[in-house]
Length: 166
Length: 166
DNA sequence: CCAGAACGCGCAATATTATTTCATAGGGGC
DNA sequence: GCCCCTATGAAATAATATTGCGCGTTCTGG
Image 1 (spheres, helix red, strand yellow):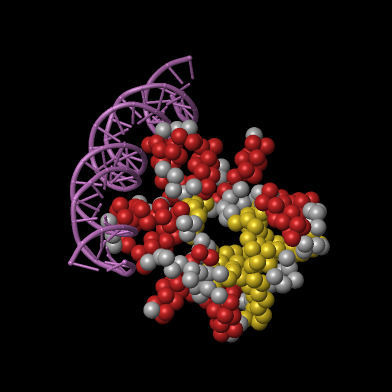
Image 2 (cartoon, rainbow over the protein chains, first blue to last red):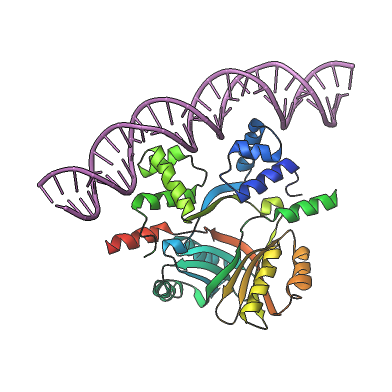
């Protein structure tokens, strides 16, 4: 049972820090209804237990000149584990590739990429990605606009499920 | 010219906070090579100018029982702006949909979804997503594993480009 | 080339927070 | 009922964040 070691206060902490990762511990404690010291201990515990992987500023890529976002669907020639791993390692080396997920179905991987402009991306696509070992096919789609971007956990759903089981 | 108002220190601040959003201002100041007060002023300015959209804890969805991650490629019947907007609004209402991007090409949208289990996702897929207004086709792919997940800006590239222009 | 203004820095002081310490209350298991 | 385990909160202390201010640098217009 996942998350069964977490009580409602822990989940509230996670939800609050997911929404605002820079909240002070004092404010966080106030919101979850306990005093600061135990609240901080809980946060540390959640961090060490891996529930919290880290904290990150959400930096606007477009403001920094990365105008282009692309999803790339990649098919490989060989799906042997060694070859899959090799491709994943390659993806980790490419700065323009920000996410790499292995999928089921006909497509083997989906990559989320960013680039300053189209020509930069084109160069990457033709000279790096398509040219890489074991890559059979690449289909790309430019992101026109982003309607929603809330990585993370839908705590609403989590709470709903837990209360239903109770 | 994007980011032209930012000097190297500002960019370093953004890079550091993207890597660790909970770094103390003192530590941040040390790393970027200035004292704490001006460093904090810069951070505030970057926040207000929109370079920093916010800060978020990276919460492990799997640890909380969201075992399933899915990419859904959605095609609509009508691509009129009003209909596109309507679909986007719908996506914002669905908690299981964490990201929604409009694409060019044959697929109109890609959604990144999470769910506690497959049957929950199946219900969502058949009863909500596929059944929604204006939805023509949905192709889904389960995420087998994630090889890379570093949303944000590749500052390495940014610096490289800026230094080349200089 | 020289004011004068504008900008950004760092020091020092103060206000808030984070963190440690410790005594205590609640919850099983024997 | 008693002990052990766990987690809490008050209080004290250590660090940080934040503000106020004087200084040097740069830019600008004479």
